[in-house]
Image 1: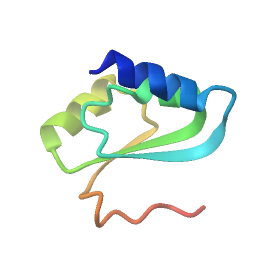
Image 2: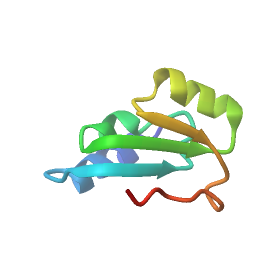
Image 3: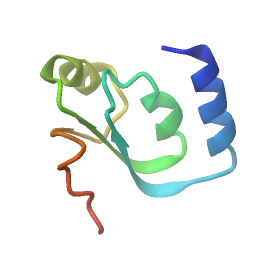
Image 4: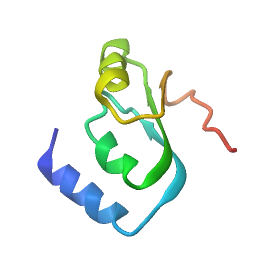
Length: 77
């Protein structure tokens, strides 16, 4: 977890809100807490089952998906 990345992400998302977002390559969900403050429905996608299980347990995702981000079809609804 990179503190500088967390700071930049917080700054980029400041004063913005999205109804839905997908965190492609979410890993263990290190940035999900920041993202969830700005997103109504947050989906985490990763192809590593070990990391995804951590994201499922400790991340702030509404949904986690086991998939290769290059093949994942982003929902349009």
